[in-house]
Amino acid sequence: MTSNLKAIGRDYNWLKKQVNKFGFEPEQALIVTFDGKGQIFCQKKEGK
Image 1 (cartoon, one colour):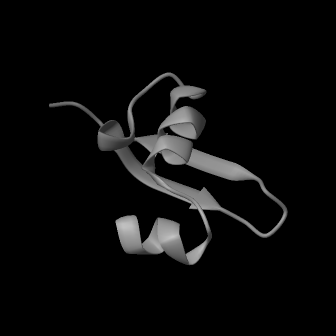
Image 2 (spheres, rainbow, N blue to C red; image 1 turned 180 degrees about the horizontal axis):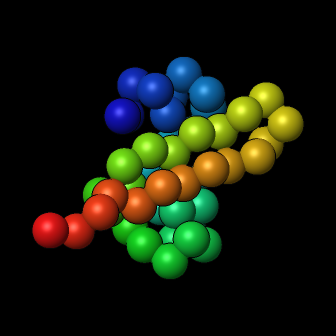
């Protein structure tokens, strides 16, 4: 995850702020995507 964030010029703190907007923590995310237009998609892992 860290190397992927670095490749797009971002860091964990940025990711945390973005994912928190969806109401959960990065560790709870199944997938987070960030496109070239700055749009973010997050999907939370399903609990057992």
